[in-house]
Image (cartoon, rainbow over all chains, first blue to last red; front, top):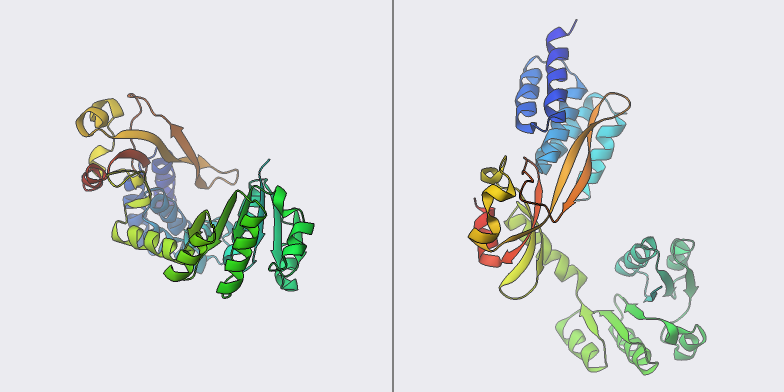
Length: 85
Length: 228
């Protein structure tokens, strides 16, 4: 069971939906340290960075999400849009 | 509805023809290269293979009835000059021409071009500006001293209402709009966002992290705000 990871991901969703993006990033950084190769960590990081217009970090995050899950459609869409910016 | 004729379907010409068609304008696209015309057929209202220096041919197409012509001839400087001259002689009110050099621009103005553009130069200037000030996305110069900028909300302004900030009285800066990315949950349960825009925000509107402000004011003051 990935309870810790699931909790952190759920918390990051909560922070993103509450528009507390910096806090979402902190939680996702903690999730990253668990070293479970979970693409959603990087997808959510990408979303939070993109909202904050940290486009370089957003691009890098979506790229990592796609490395772990090459058919991650939403991550690909965000990355494509950011590359054209 | 406004009608445009785009002459020369290189990278710039075809992009502008497509963009105008997407905005539902009537667009006639002309190029002597069959492949370039084929690529744009079905996207614009009409696409024609012809040598645009053929004045008679242009007249047969009814060019006189168009509001604006965009001439983007790429490498052939002489052709763009001849075409501009012909279009003005036909009575077209608004002729916009892509220039390759300052000398080319000078000649185009002399033969009647209403506007001369340097797309690469303009893009380069915009890119340089955005690289120099990463927090500023776009700038529209209204005069030498005033402009409209699109910038990421500075940290110091986050969680404050426009009423608290008194930007208009303190800095003589107007907040025209706020672009905001609103978080959403997608049907598959994942998080995402959709872009929203608040036009003419009021004093009770609170700024949040990630907001993009569209501000109108004096350039020097806008720079100060960016650095807050």
